Length: 417
Image (cartoon, rainbow, N blue to C red; front, top):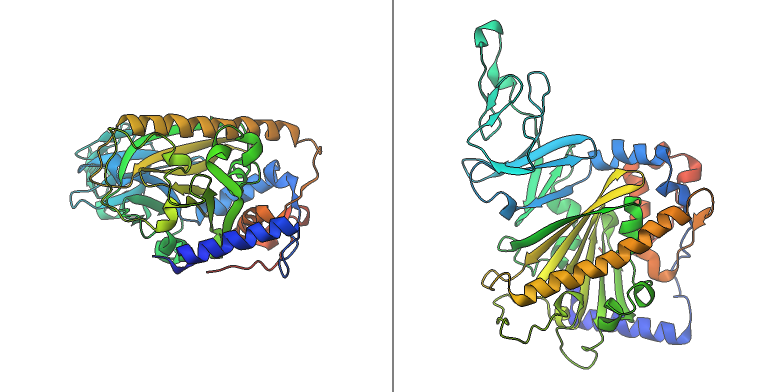
């Protein structure tokens, strides 16, 4: 269990936050957070910087192992305008490749998912084995000195955290475990290799992807945007916040029903689990899970709210400066639990409704904040995760590459790991 999220530590953080709010004071020795230039969300210059640096050299979550359950199973993904796919080879290993034939650049796979015995180019029928090696070329004699071993599909760095599949377009990136750092320890109580994918949804949202990230990084909006939903389950006064290296963040928000004892009443477990559908879990999660809603931001674009029955993984990806896709995975934590019960269905419906409340608010922000209507974003103490994210975003892009008017001022944040 992560020491940073022991029940004793989280209770202490909750108590300190409660006292601070009673006194209505700003924490001593905590820096005043810098303003964020609003043009970072609208500028084509900044969008291109993200496209050519951030998305090229950062670990990105692209799928769950259950999406490629068998030999030859594959799933295609586009990272902005770069087509890739991942597949399970004959050895059961998941590999990732550019979705590009090494003859004249045709797209190999057009369907979102499928199963193949080999990967056949639809243009000239060059055929690749499941491990990406080129195994057949029609009229091969017409290609003198062709060495098929030099024309294998171009592979990508692909590493996993249990059933979670990550890729990176940069071959020189640090190992995934090093990148995750302390956040991996915080979520190590989840048996990721045994988790099962229950459902996945794609939401199209008309706003910049960073607006979505920022919304999932603070609880300030809960009592207003989610007045009749999340606010009924969680008491945002008790929010334990911890910032980590590499732009990662972790929070635990206390359950209202759990303020005087254990209660499965967090956002993802609000469905009536004490029913005929109930199941005695074989997975022992961090006891904090029964006291509050655990939620993690993994840089740059992942948010994971954890619950005992179903956890979600939200991945926000840009399609354009003002358009994003949020892919939402519902994950069954307990490998022995029944799946697709009434409780599961109600949980998904309830959480999707909560997300729609966020998306409605965010599309409004996208419209209202442009055209110099809001020169900069003012951050409060409870929005510190947004600052940690944006500072690491600048570090990843390279501050020297960012026009001065689009940079965020550096402040020394208290990182715990």
